[in-house]
Image (cartoon, rainbow, N blue to C red):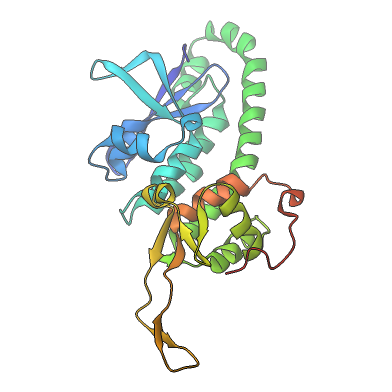
Length: 270
């Protein structure tokens, strides 16, 4: 990505730089975002939490002499979700309610400062006439992107408010309330088919990768049951979905068709 325009924004005294590429797409300096969200190691946070398709580098932009990683709006949501700062949600709202509207209001080539320059310098009108068509196209693309990302932004608000973890059935209800219509049975099927959980001795168990990624956890039961012969037995640990796991599921399942979930009911129950 080259030939970008850098626009600085300020969040409570912290600089957050945004680069607008030739297509009008806003890319945020990952280091700025990660630091605002309280990550001690910004580059590690970006590697750990932001998907490859949501980050890039710019050959002409460097941070302290090295190429800086840039993240898109979806990447910001991923960092917000994993942040432990209470202000993370406020930062997300600032991005969606102030930064992005400001960029999209003036298009890919204009900020408030350049508008003033155009009014004071007639020569810039020549460039404005040339750029106008491209600016309108970029704005349309940006508006389309807002429509595509809005469900994720709304879901993020719901997931950030979730404390602790949830069962698979509870997670299915939360996803259904946020644009992904799915039952607990269907969700278990998807998780099993995609390497999140597996059956062991008649019980669901989380794969180590899903636990290491922070998507799932296993909760031990303190209580125990009693068999018909009076013998006591321990309940099997339960698979629990973290709020990071909910966000990941929402992102992966949002575009799925209902046909992908066609399965006999009862096969995938707890």
